[in-house]
Image (cartoon, rainbow, N blue to C red; front, side):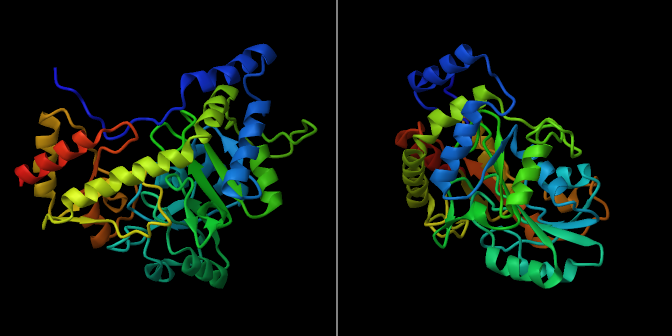
Length: 361
């Protein structure tokens, strides 16, 4: 049986570091409901990221949902079609309408120069995505939002530990929403969080994640159940100790891929600032979908499981009417393939993957 190499594997602290946290849960009997480990994780994340608040929740999708609710957004929300389905799903779930604009052909993040022409009297917010952890043009987006009195919610699912001009990229926007899913750089198995500029908004997020209760257990808001459990927080506390080493190792492996693949004429790579990237993924852009499919088929035959992120472009999904032709997003989404990248992936496996790509085309 062939060894299977998945597109990613979770980065996990040694089990011996997780067990003491689990033992404390068994001793206290506190499994959820704003427990002590979750509070400790929020505090540790604030210290690590140098942000003033972190509201931990059950997952990244819940983070975006309560962010939209906390800001009372209605009508149209401008976003990118080059993203995971959850970004647009949660807009429609909250009874708003996603309005897609095209992306930058080099960074693959939302093109801020296309945002203003999409603004109407029904627009309430901009919801950009930091793609594969590469930050959007946060400064220009902020100027546009201020000019038109719009809110900004960042889908920062990929952007844990990313800095922009010396500050955590999560500190931008009215709210930034990050994912702690098992596939992310830092994980709690399932989980996510919100970082809000306004302390009052942060407090509302805390109410919304727990059925609308305030600190006195009075029901004062229209909330939901988006709490992070103590077991998830325990894993996060152990994993957070290793995040800098995780980034270092992933960066090395990312650069090894670049070294081995950079001369191939049918491949290009995301334009990044090495100081504002966390190396969570290894996306490559092929010249055509035909080449991508040929390479993907060849890799799978050898037990290597790449993945197409983010395909198809959401601007072509019938669910999100009316559709608009957004040629850059549609071309990029058809030609992007993420190659395996995780801390325990060996150099030999990376070299094998690159050799297979070279032989295939």
